[in-house]
Image 1 (cartoon, rainbow, N blue to C red):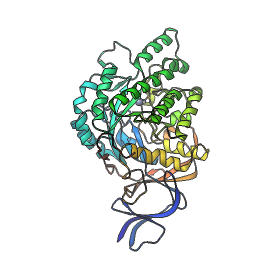
Image 2 (image 1 turned 180 degrees about the vertical axis):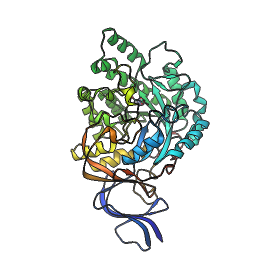
Image 3 (image 1 turned 90 degrees about the vertical axis):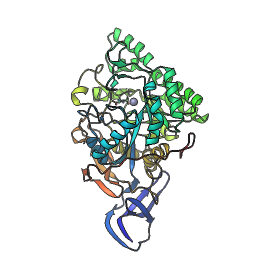
Image 4 (image 1 turned 135 degrees about the vertical axis):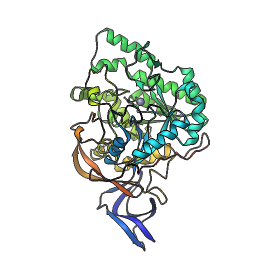
Length: 473
Ligand code: NCD
Ligand code: ZN
């Protein structure tokens, strides 16, 4: 036997255990995990030197703007940013131009991203009501990761780009979908057994409350929160939970930002409703109190809320209500983000800073290193049915690894980000704990912060298609 790669002296971390062993790789897969010296030659050796060896970490929520507004970001940039940030697989969001709304667009997108990919990737499909209800089945069969619905958003009629600051009466806009249309989308997605994931904000409430604030001349961050209070999220989440009960769809709440929404999901889970929820670093590490320091860079939808919400989200992480953490990487140019809070688009970079921020939280005692693997590898892989091919150090799994040095100190700096648009709310943030090597299917693609992988190496990952109601989590 000739092994392609041996990874030695590693301390392997799973979602529950920490143990020492060497890992042997053949043809991009894990062939052995053992403390014994195996017979046969080894082509390449990596000495982990006592650092942690984690399964390759996954970011389930990335907007690379490609194809479409690629002046903001494109997939060669975002997948290098992922590699630099210790991410081996990203799930790409479908709000591109054209969107991933039918089988043909799926095929084109697969080819487009494949040519630029440094890391492996899965593809989300979009739900746009009667415009693509009849395409849900083919998208499922093509192998989408899940179905995404931007609940509360209007989209542009031709480009399907999100209208960040929508007002009724705007030209060339498809207004937000109504409850009946949402119900129909859920019925269609339920037939596939895949996740129906929503951005959860009530447009009706946003319109009324924002108009009220504007009338009083309000333009501060606190005013933005008055226009999009916690009720905006929890109302939509509760509606979705009831519709999930009625349709049987696997309902997933994206980027949760409020205490009330975390509690609503906790309660529904206890009742056995098929609901899950994720959150992002900006909700874990920022609150309204940071706005003065950070400024408009921090504008994201749903908005970063109050300290009490941050606390409730950490509680949701601790008790397992929140399945996983992802970045909601959503770049806009620095010029776009420099304007006034009211008119600039929502979103910021995240794919590169997520793992450092989460490792820093381990060093601060907020979570354990095993939680990193649970939240960034095992749970997302299980939820989206790519486990154990992804998300696990197991024999037969893809040889994806993230090596982390828990003592390494770094400062997140916007100018060092690999994204095309370097917009982050974490500029100047000091962290201890860094990913130092990223390995995808046995090949090192990042070492000590330097990208050493090749464009076009990343491959599409498709989930195991189960019958509705049956999945691996
Ligand atoms: C996202 C984007 O720009 O694509 N922006 C954001 O503020 N989160 C869209 C979204 O997820 O809402
Ligand atoms: Zn969203």
